[in-house]
Structure formats: C-alpha cells, structure tokens
Length: 408
Image (cartoon, rainbow, N blue to C red; front, side):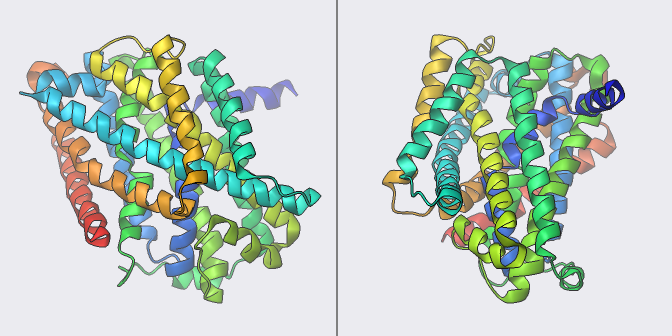
C-alpha cells in the first residue's frame, strides 16, 4: 500500500501549476467543441488540436520563464515594460474577464443540463436547473471561501481524474469504428462552420492560460533555478491536454461521425451514446462532463481577483474581502443560462472562438519581453525560442481570421 501511495505521489508531483491549468482547460468548452468537431469532421481537424497543444507548451514556457527571471507576473510586466503598457494590460485583463464570465454561463448551463438528465435517468425525478446551479455554486463558493492554492490543486486533480477516466471508459464501451478514425486522420479544412477551427484553438491555446500560468508560477515561489522543472511541468500539461481532448474527439468521430449524426446540445451526447454503450456509458459520460465543468468553473472564479492583483502588482489573497466579492459575482453568472434563450453549447463555442481573438495580444508582447536584455539579462530568448514564438503569432493570427470570418 505504501509503495502504491509513493508512486501516486510521485506521479502527482509531475504536475505543478500545470495541474491547475489542465483543470481549467479541459472543461465543458473542450468537451462540447471536441465532440462537435469529431461528429462533424471526424479526426480531420486533429492537426489543429495538435498544433494548439504544441503552441500552448511554447507559451507556457515563455510566460513561465519571464516570471522566473523577473519575479513579476504577466500583466505587471506588460504594464510596466511598454510605453502606455497599462492600456494593453488593461485591455487583456478586461477581455479575459469578460470572456470567462461568458464561459461561466455556458459551463454551468451544461453542468445543470447533464445533472438534470442524470437524475432523471437514475431516479426518475426531474429537477429544475436553477436548484442544481444553486447547489453547485454554493459548494464551489464554500471551497473557494476557505481554501488555499494547495487545496485547489487537490480538488482539481480529482476533477481531472474523473474526467479522464470517464471518457476513456466511454471510448471502450461505445466501441468506435477505429478504421473510420484512421481514415479521418487525413488533415483537412472544413468548407463550413470555420469557427470550429478558432474554437479548437481557443479552448486549447487559450490566452487566459498563459496570463494565469505566470500567476500560478509566482504562487509556487519558483525562481530561475526551477526553469527545468517549469519546462517539464509545461510539457506534462500540454501532453495531457492533447490526450484528453483527442480521446473526446475520437469518441465522437468513431461513433457519431460514422452514423452521420451531430451534436447540437450537450445532452444529445447522452442519448446518442446510450444505444452504443448502454446506460452505464451514458451515466459515466454525465460524470465526465460534470467533472469537466466543475474543474473549469473552479479556476474561472479565481481569474478576476488574480488578474486584478497581477495588474496592480499586489499579493494574491483569495480570502480578502475584494476577492470573495469578485468570486461571488463570477459564480452568480452561472445563473445566466437559466435566463438566456441561447443554448449552453452555442455559448461555449462562441466563448472559445472569442478567446482565439485575444491570443495575438498575448503572444506578441511575450516575444518582445523575452528579447529585452534589460529585463531578461542572460536569459534573453534564443534563436530557437524566437522562431517558435513567431510561429505561435502566425497561428494566432490565422485562427483569429477564422473566428472573425465565422462571426460575420
């Protein structure tokens, strides 16, 4: 038993700040986007997911390195190292907070829909989504009221394990057509619904991840001596995000795409997969999506207080009065899905595409900062790092184009 515990703790130690960001990244936005992508296009857009994961790693390392060298977080560095940098930093902060509040509505709506169907399926009782959201937000608020960063890591690890195991089990139970999966691996660009390309990039290579990455690296108290650890943590995070997202896409591509069906509502997945894997598969799927949703809302509620502290260059204290008020307001947005006519999955795909539009504003500043000798000293960006960052910027402009084209 001690050996198993030791191995488990060793495995957990591989995930530092990245664990927090995996919990944020692989949420209902990822589930909805990847499931719809798999159903509509098979595995043909896996290349977008792979590139997004690679560029996520590049920006994780870049933002982490800047924080390790300067000891300052991302928005503070942008604000104080550019002429009129406060305008750019303020724009990034407001855009990210607005995008995440929109995401809260979609995420909580999906969680409520899935739990409503799960309760109906198991005990035959139909519960109003309002009460489900009230219970979920109250529990999350209690955790955030009393918890500290180490507690958050443990809670998120549980959610991520639930999500990962659920979709792997569903993949086994529904027995997808692996031949169709292999054929679908041929890269392609859709002739319709171009916003999916932006949504995949937005949910994987999300601008908020890199700003928050800087904050969480600072929260850990790492220094430049921990650069190797930071790179390893970044790699583990990006690889885990890629694997989990690819599994969700494969579940949908090997079943719904072959059958010619699509996903318009998250609850569609339950009734589309139930005939393939039985009620057990449907219940496991519900647990996975709920785990994904809660793992996303948990960090989202911390984004506003942490970004404001980052911008002001003040200590992060989730138990301050200001932080608790901001967390409370963020969780209140979860009730938005009850009031809006727009379905939660549509809200999620729109919010993910919106995130893709912010990526250039995050990728370009870090390229400039890493090349400033006055800031980075002996740790200025190498030629290899610069080439990768230019590739990220090109990719960010490419996906922004698709987001804007689809919107209009």
